[in-house]
Length: 387
Image (cartoon, rainbow, N blue to C red; front, side, top):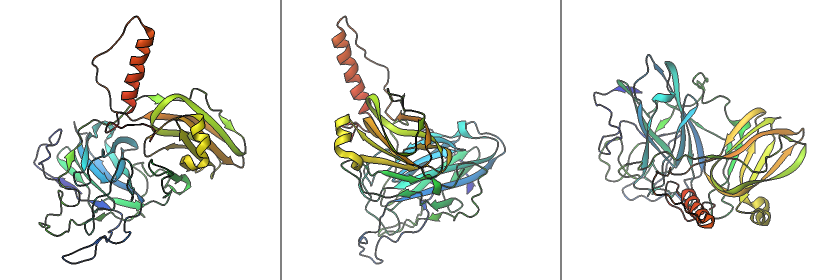
């Protein structure tokens, strides 16, 4: 709901400002046995994807629309179809971080909509570890509040929340994160648009903050996420990278395989635009070199996208690091691949010390070192961008 509040929004928010939003999800998970002494269920936390929507009206545009939000495990949030936040950053499960973002640039007079894809991993990844569950928290959820002029929009049971079967869970093929398997034919068409009809979607479920020692306040902070912490860095961004050997536009029928070389190691979300019949399967494997991808074969596939028919766009939920992409396409009538690129998601490097000399080898060493630092600068410094 949108609630009136006399407070002036703080930017960035002070962490001690109380939350008005509540944790919401598509269902109420039962994670522990009742009683004073509780124990986790044997396997209560399976991977899931939930689509969130909240439509609202604006008679005039606010000068700023300050929002803070977080999720368990990760979210991609959009306003009127424009992505405004990806997060939260990695953290300890009991010190969960939240994003801070100004929504004003994406708002318009009239009907607006906030949407989010929220992914709960279920099992640990290299960048996420599950929280120790309470009875209803610790198996997915989203929390949001936004100042819209003189009102506040908060996460509650006036949102719509749809458990989405377009994604299929699969185990990780190695030491990296789990693959993303998306059948876009099962995605509600136009679901991020303000005028999309969500009347048949179920209402979101509020996740009660109930646990031993609970003080009665249903708003954060509380177990299992602790005192929520403001995101200490900006949203990740970077250069759009494309293969140095441009892929063909038209791909003939049958099973076809293409090898795409990006010329250097890149790290970010993979974007693909295609046009063709419904049901065409695109599978992508990645590696640092040709021999890496060839050695692993189809076991290294981290993306499997099934097209909905007609023009469509795919962007991976998580960042992937690689130099070589191996694309396998299966179609009966052929398909057009109009775009395959990487939107790098790196911590912006501030201006500072530079290096230049008359020795081109030393200049090159400096450039390679700087690029190595950049590509290992995500929401934390990592040892290898291709993990």
